[in-house]
Length: 495
Image 1: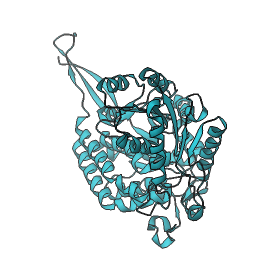
Image 2 (image 1 turned 30 degrees about the horizontal axis):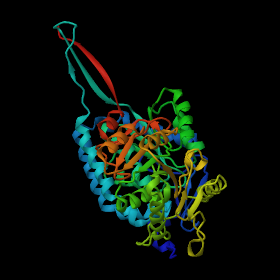
Image 3 (image 1 turned 90 degrees about the vertical axis):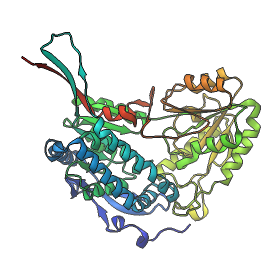
Image 4 (image 1 turned 180 degrees about the vertical axis):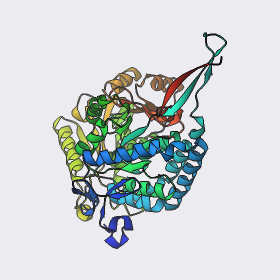
């Protein structure tokens, strides 16, 4: 594995340390504490970050509030749209640096990070298009002719964005895009394991012309900076992506001032393959529905239900596909899968593999930490369990790693019952040529998003969201933007 030297790192990393980004500039943590961020491919330290706490969150929220009440409040929808178009061009021009930072900081293959570019640019343009749609209505009333009634939409205020480590480069835009479109301001708290692209994006936004204080970033631990942001009495809305357990803590913390919440939480998504499916599409599609991003995707289709009559052939083809994947250096353009985010996450995944083995599932591929040239990184082999029961731990709990559980079924009714036998409801999929089966499954799977003969596709104009313990709120689509606004009813006496 060719580990990049420091001379290959972007200047943003090699300058030695990075503070919080508050009020348009870099600030050290109030308490002076710092923390390391590591390259998961090598285990080595990339740089050090400010370790924020409640005092740092206070500074960032105050900056965001000043900007919200000050110059940002005077931007018209047209001016916000023009700024988002300028941001789009700025990100387009500087994207290679962001992609490299994402690869170094969280281990995503550089080719995959580069492939995010068009999705991110489309996301920014979608939110730019929504600036002119933040409108109310004139509504007929029963009050009499001298009264005119209408509604207005107004930005909620300061938004706290708490985003995960499994894709911060794109995750941040579900907060930033809607906030900038509606006139809100933002305090971002990226995951401590992967903060660099969020910090660099904030710097780029100011360079593109965003007023100081509109976007602020506080780095630190979730239990310190994240908890302080969730509970802060001057934050009007929290957008959180992460575990269901942490989501519960966010809900409790929001009671301080009855914050609005958007929660994208855990998942254990079902992916159902019927005997009539096109296996040339279903095998790689279902495999990458889990292995993509090394399994670190909230809606990964980790419970793979396969009709029993094709189980043997399907498993053989799935194993062959898994063996064909190149796992290694994220900077190698031929790499398919990179490392897990951290030593802690790698150990968690390997513990689940042991549990699956102990509970009687058949391990047919992988299951080990990788050695050789990648021994210092946090690499786990693509792993497949066959003959899993839906009651086993590996079929019930979110692993967040490259681990597939293949569960056989005999009838469509059984497949649907098994698919819905989970506390989660983030995503699901079905592979079939039969229109009736397709219709039954897409209506019957209890999840926020269902894919048919594909997996994991997301479009910002359509959006996605969760159900059951996978959370609530929506990312993308006009309803996402509307959630960053509140409605006023206006009654005018024209006498």
